Image (tube, rainbow, N blue to C red):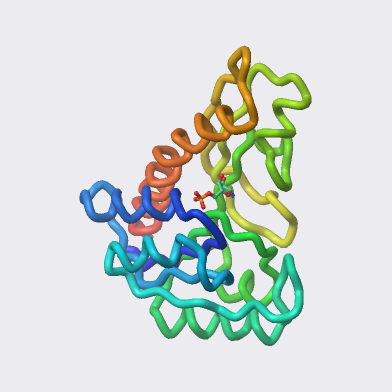
Length: 194
Ligand code: GRF
């Protein structure tokens, strides 16, 4: 059973999908902590609903990253919780050396496009604006760059005539909620062989 931590800043729908997969026995993992940098983020409420330990990490002075001191505190929180593998689910901060060194090839992220296309914010909107007929979802290892790192799994999502950013995003999120637990399950079955 892999001990996972889930980190997120917002709505937490991927966190919910992962916790449901664990509860349903489809994903063999234990969520040892859910951490958010946003005090009133719904993701923390979802963790409480599932009885998962959860914590707020006061984010400090920067908007898109942590001061090294705070990132070191995050590493301590995760180690204290016994986390072996870190799952980013809508986490809006770029991780740097302290986290990457503490969990080498043990941090993954989900992104709402077919990377390397459309990294960054509102990727569905970028795909729509570019006139794409197909976009999708990517699960990838996290490195020091934004929405970069080795790709683990991808799934296509069609762009339909008349799509709005909202309708396309909703279709992408439905796929995320299936792809993320599936990809984690595959990663963990490989991890457990070693
Ligand atoms: C998802 O669309 C994910 O791809 C991106 O952030 C969003 C998080 O959504 N990285 P939620 O908080 O899991 O609902």
